[in-house]
Amino acid sequence: MDVHQTKLEGVYLLEPNVFADDRGYFVETFNHDVYEKAGIQATYLQDNQSLSKQAGTLRGLHYQLAPEAQLKVVRCVTGAIFDVAVDIRIDSPTYKQWVGVILSEHNQRQLVVPKGFAHGFCTLVDQTIVAYKVDQLYSPSKDRGIRWNDPEIAIEWPCNQPILSKKDRAHPLLHKAENNF
Image (cartoon, rainbow, N blue to C red; front, side, top):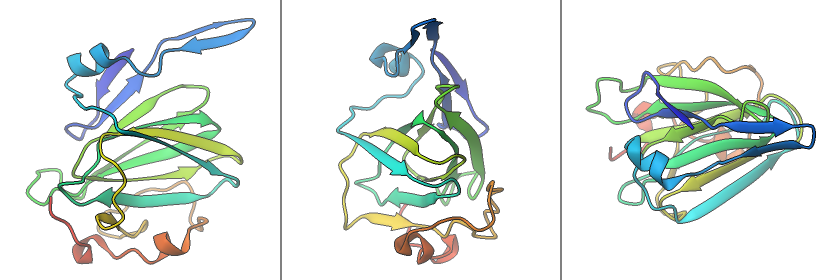
């Protein structure tokens, strides 16, 4: 597995080795020693999976307040997504900056989203399944979000009229969001 640091400290793009033949492929999606060697140290407590039926479905931007903040390792099982991590650490030199990558069933890439970052993705094809590991359990009382199209962040999403949940449509702008990072 190749580990690449993105422009945002702590956000990594993981590219696993894919062993393909005429039967299909085999890929190692998690290896504790590889993660630890790269400085990605966590004990994973929960795996999550979502199905988005339509291309243009946008989920995010989500995070949990400390001390229940989550490190996430995101991958696309089927389909393809534009996956985004936004630095929301107020004293960080990269505060409000974002990185976006395409994760797909074909490239098998994974994105590591550390604590102190908001996360979201937009599906690029119908019937997309996304899976991710987290190092903290879901905490409804600490669950927060930021509006997907906050002009101060200015994410270049692949769609202008995404399909959003009622909850995601109601998220505040970053400067009004509760944030203890």
